[in-house]
Length: 166
Image 1 (cartoon, rainbow, N blue to C red):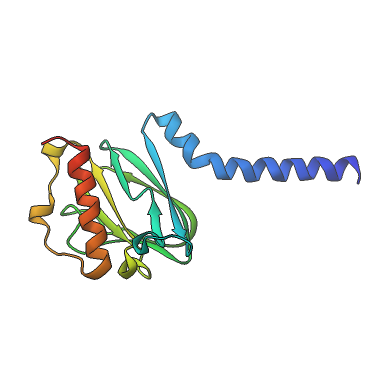
Image 2: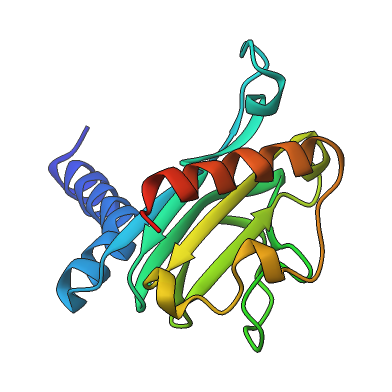
């Protein structure tokens, strides 16, 4: 291998690493906290609601915090659940991308699902801002989820209530 070819491989490798780290570097520079969310398919799990999942499935962020959704490829997507996000917030719809970052500027509770695997319990909850500022606590949600998605959401609301004192 020639020296020029080795140099080109190094440049390409460095560029690839930079692209992978760019979302985290941007949030570190801006001072806004960020949280990565992976989308997992795990047929070896013992608990059926964990076979298809967001990891982590419950996140708390301050207003202005960022969420980095990873692995929205193939069958996995990120979709806001109708009636289960703060009023006036644009619906989240992410598909066919390795990574996408969203800034959470509106306080509230955000319920997100995978369009394909939501019915199997692939649901997550993001709590943005302080409890007092939430515009849509579970008692005022306009919709509900059924089946395994509803079961998973109940578990997430329980996590929320355990995590945050009333």
